[in-house]
Length: 391
Ligand SMILES: Nc1ncnc2c1ncn2[C@@H]1O[C@H](COP(=O)(O)O)[C@@H](O)[C@H]1OP(=O)(O)O
Ligand SMILES: [Mg+2]
Ligand SMILES: [Mg+2]
Ligand SMILES: [Mg+2]
Image 1: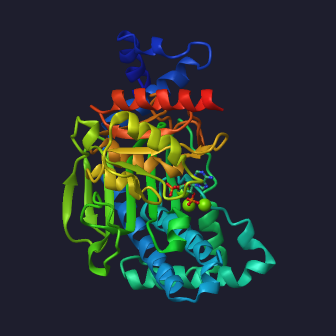
Image 2: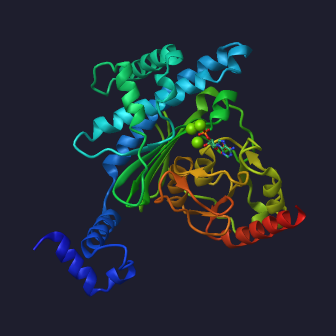
């Protein structure tokens, strides 16, 4: 008797299969799905987590190099978007390449932000060449990745692996090669965000935040001091969230803020007002009685900072019609969840990463600890209703 049938029969005996829609899936499909879910929930992802940490750290080095050159350049080239383009593509190519090399015999699926369409155009020849050089320099300086130099075509192919649609079956890596491009250009916060989906659930996540101080940013002091920045957050389902410095030293288990009193809870939100309504956040904070001014930072570094309790609430309300992508939240979501926090949409629904490249959700995303969530959702709904009736 095959393993799938025996698992299927034991699940049937327990009545588990009745929870699936009998009209849309055949018995064999139901058994296969349940078997994968059962396996997924009891699996260890240690190897994948180690590979994700390595890939994100190597990509962070490429991004740091590009950002450093950008900040030393003159004003004119700072208004040029090309440095971030080079770093975005370079980071995606590196991570895609490293992950495939770590798991050569496994099927590889990557849902990532960038594709090579523009890079293949004639006018991008120099940019592509620069990306290839940067990728090769970074791989060579790491020294632990055994490879001959990549060609321009290798780089394009690695980037284009990110075309996957993800979904509720099998394993998919989810990548934002630079999250917070505006922050990157300003010399502020950005993150390299990598997660793994298994059967539609986020099972691990890594956030490399090269400019995030190792010490708390609760006091809103984001002055970047050279020797104390660079955090790597990592989380695996059921195993907690850890933070270490990007240079590899100092590993600490982290926990979200345990405050039950909204007055003590500081709020994180986007630096960019175009990404999230600051007005709505301040209305919510007022209703909750939050005393501290909001902490505005770019990227999923907000999730990282929240996971170690620098603040207690993250609010995100994009303009109407904006569709959130899974790579903008998957890694941050598990980093916060494994540190004891919870993320939901504005209506309180949990985030569903199983539907493809987009997170289709109600109005916005709110993140906090378990105790504050009910009061936060109430304030969110009141503020949203007030805004709607004033329009
Ligand atoms: N109009 C927009 N509204 C909301 N988010 C946006 C918008 N445009 C880009 N983003 C994405 O929002 C995220 C950063 O937002 P924030 O820093 O405010 O948290 C990034 O993922 C950024 O993409 P990207 O990854 O290209 O930087
Ligand atoms: Mg992003
Ligand atoms: Mg991005
Ligand atoms: Mg982008």
